[in-house]
View 1 (cartoon, rainbow, N blue to C red):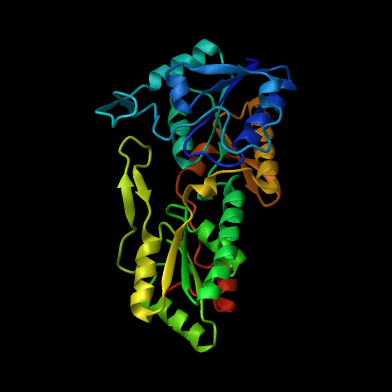
View 2: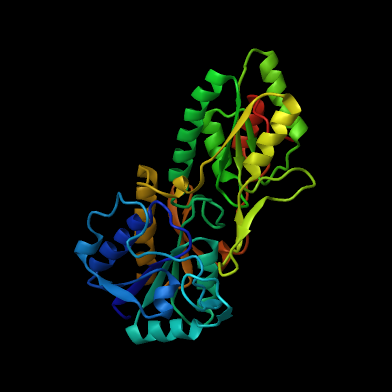
Length: 362
């Protein structure tokens, strides 16, 4: 087996990426392997842009947010944007053979792809072209099947929970309804976990369509009990019954062109109109993606990175590191990207939330 491996980070950035890079590289160095770091995700592979990683490159990066290798969420080698950089692409081209050639020329035993469903779906396609891919699950959305949790999720939840805590004091002072819109795309994991941890009164997630009247009823009932403020946490993919998600814009060159955003204002305006109570909206946005990863994400990223190297040593190409219970295991990449992991309607946190009086707007 070749003693040289590659590594890339693709898709949206995420706290804990550097922890994985560090773990992969240091674990590989322990076996005397060489490590190639591709710059800006698959763009670096297509354009043959990479650098040899040494121990000093990955020392001291555990606590850093972002990724030292850079990333791209539009550089899909099977649908590669062609045109002037910085402008919308006029067309797309299949450049996957350049990836195959690059991996062969470098003589890599495996390419470690760190990413979410988009990145690992590309990895699954590359496997069919005999590119040796091993996956590491990354996304703040926690919507990747095959693993209980992805790294980056805990940091995003911690950030969102802090925002809920801060909104409580201003909401109580002004007797307002405060609506916090959080990320998560089509899954409600961030909204559910941060809403519960922050003591929200209403939690709106994509998996449970809401009715404004039901939310307004909850707010009015709280007022009648002397609770003159309410906190609503809404996932960006939440939608009203019979309605659609709010799309902020579309980026056609991206693996997933839909950019959600704006549901918080729809909910806020609806509450104020239905109750007459002053309502304010905060959109947390990319703050959830940035900054230093939590201790849990640093540890999880390190475990995943080390597992990726173990998979390569064992010849388990086409597998992804995953968390199942308290164990780090491996699952086929194809299984991990077969479908999005959505919040089950009977999830223990949902049952507990309903039991203590939290509304889901249904």
